[in-house]
Image (cartoon, rainbow, N blue to C red; front, side, top):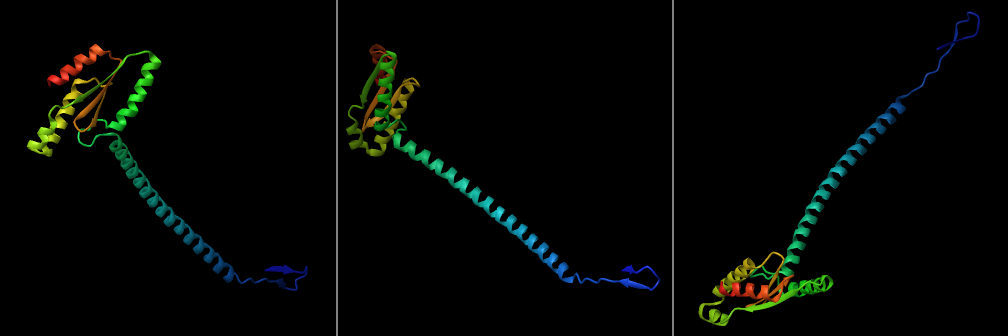
Length: 177
């Protein structure tokens, strides 16, 4: 209410606004905002869960990749390098030996009469013999030496920075075991 005029006529201006619609719209906006916030929270939770699942899958894939990589380079029976790994690493060692002017020796070992072991006692015992031989050979070599099962009962060895005399002594020690 606001008085009108200057005399005491008792006139007043009155304005009445119905704000019901405005309050309803504000309530609708508030409700829509709360629903939107809840949807954002729900979606964020869902995305976080999906991301955790994705990370777990990626970790599993990385483990599988590493396993397959190892299997492609390692002899499954003896745990030594396989022929492909030996050949690749030997190339690297040859290049390094040339570049640095260092000796590099290579030896091949094979288990005499191994076929007789398999024929007489079976492949299961032959596998035990191969694993044991691999373990003995690896034990006699240095950590920098490359030992591989080259095929069947053949083992290939590469000795970086070793001359023929050192390799001869080492291979004789292996042969005695």
